[in-house]
Length: 136
Image (tube, rainbow, N blue to C red; front, side, top):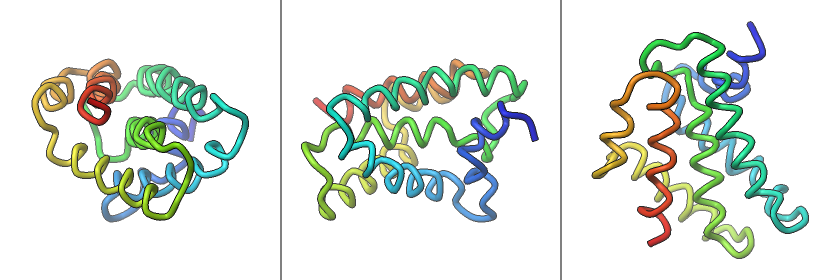
């Protein structure tokens, strides 16, 4: 497996036999806790790196469409949702996880449009549209 596919698959979490997006989101929450406890801005930087790295990885892996195993967008999106928390609490983490999964599955408004766009840009553009939905 290439580095691009490892990144695109969310360190392999996208290969889960059931609900790979949910598995990747759970992994993101678990990885997000220490990022939230690190110096200020660490989670925001990790989110930006995951987003840009996701664009590169999906393109480099020559992904066609939006296969279920590509979950780097779930990881970056879940971290984006965690940015709305002042600190990691059990209730806050659960709420961020549940709200992100709800929006990711339902794909309301512009999120659904962005998700239907082709290639890496479409996959990761849907992530960009979550920002105003989650934090308005």
